Length: 227
Image (cartoon, rainbow, N blue to C red; front, top):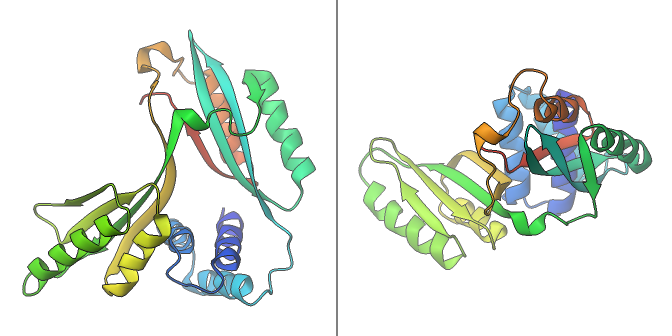
């Protein structure tokens, strides 16, 4: 898991062009911290990506498909990072053959929306009110869909679908500490009800998701099943 996560960081750092505030890079680093990846490993991964020391030719891959589970058909999107596309494709196709159907790339795009979320730490008092106004203004001008201020904690969450990089800029220009960030696909509509999906242990959807979780080339798995 650490190897996979560090590879994501290196790829994000390479794509960022050295911009440490790039949201994709911030997201990858945040994910690594949640998994308790050592700080030295994170720093080394960023360095490999920015300075071209990462010799792997890893590329981002995407697979769309459906999984038949219970009486429901669940739409699935698999995101991966691989240095051997043929190897990854073979394992993903085998999983879909067993549990559902592999579809053309981006076939499920209309079923999901890409959402970026950044949670920022604000001071308990003093200039908090001024910063709240600044965050709200900067985020909305940058293309954020929404800004939510929690009532009892110095944390603000801003969500942006269209302009993720602009939201990353908000973090930088206001010099706030990003506690958590992430970019994910969430179902736009057509959420499959939980009672329609075979959720028992060993069910088709659970077995498929387990296969994806065990696959070193898979970074994220999204589906439209509730629960």
